[in-house]
Image (cartoon, rainbow, N blue to C red; front, top):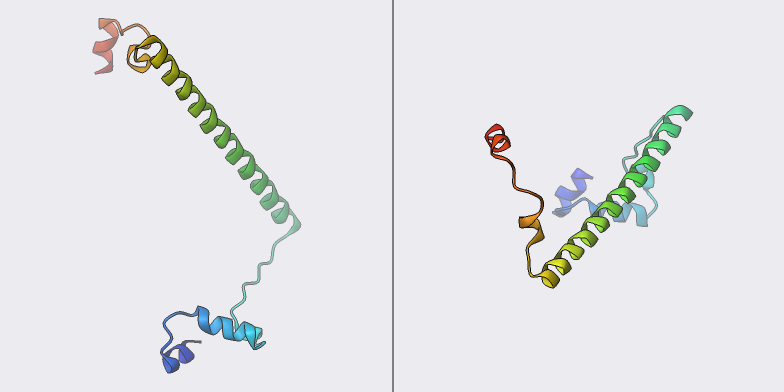
Length: 100
């Protein structure tokens, strides 16, 4: 493919790969062969399932955060305050010294 790219002054490899697929010379394309055991396949499937669950949990957490921020914003408008600034009691002086 490099020789063809140089010969015809083609910048990308996708054009030549398209020609190969179009004209039936797929044996010239690079192929990746992966050998894996059944345990490895099962492990990959389990990891993919775990990944999907974690993505869903993250999406749920983002939605919950957005809902809570909306509630805080509405409460701020209703009660004319800033709950994020005024949330909780101020730290006692003894704790302020320890955090510095």
